[in-house]
Length: 293
Image 1 (cartoon, one colour):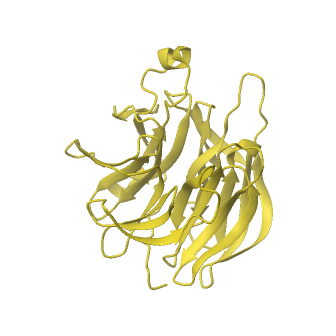
Image 2 (image 1 turned 90 degrees about the vertical axis):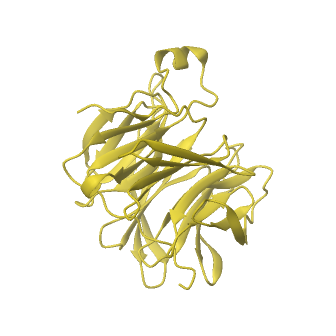
Image 3 (image 1 turned 180 degrees about the vertical axis):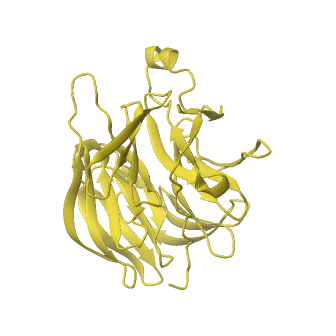
């Protein structure tokens, strides 16, 4: 079944969709639009909270609210999306770095990576945040993306978008240690297809779904790295996937329109919108950030 428009929002850079099982609502960010969106599919209700700076990622928070990654660092947000407390500064040069993709791990820590905006120096990193502070898990990156965990929490997936690569790590939920980095998948760009792995999610069978930025499609990979399926998206630049809806059997996909050509937007006028399609295999509920971990 094809992906269709779930919310015709035309975000500049829609990203990080997160499904709240308790509230049956989808939250996502518009990075360059500096906004946090809340969408309730059953009623069609849609609300937007304006942010003071670029917001790259969010995670649900135990007891309500969110943890979020901004250009300046990691912050706690209240249930309405208002900033409360800065947890950690972005340790990189904030003139050329901001937090990008992130996800809460099975124990309640937050993993979030940065983007090296010039994309020429490999200065981005993937970090882990818990009560001990910020710790580096991976470096030498251009755009940290695609953080997701296997159903048992013992495999961490992570991509570096401009290098067309997805990596797999052995992950210890008890300590937050990521070891044994191995190549999971490498996409092969061509002159007509620059699709590269952006945001991702894992389903209940342990399969990894990734959005291909500038690829106009999403992919599903088996746990052993075999490509199982591709689904076209009505936008050239899908950015991230997540599972939501009843039984977590709806796949949602955010997308981008910022910086795209007039010709591309003419061909894909709904770029920036939120898309969805039903899936046979459900997703996994999102973990919640626990400041005490």
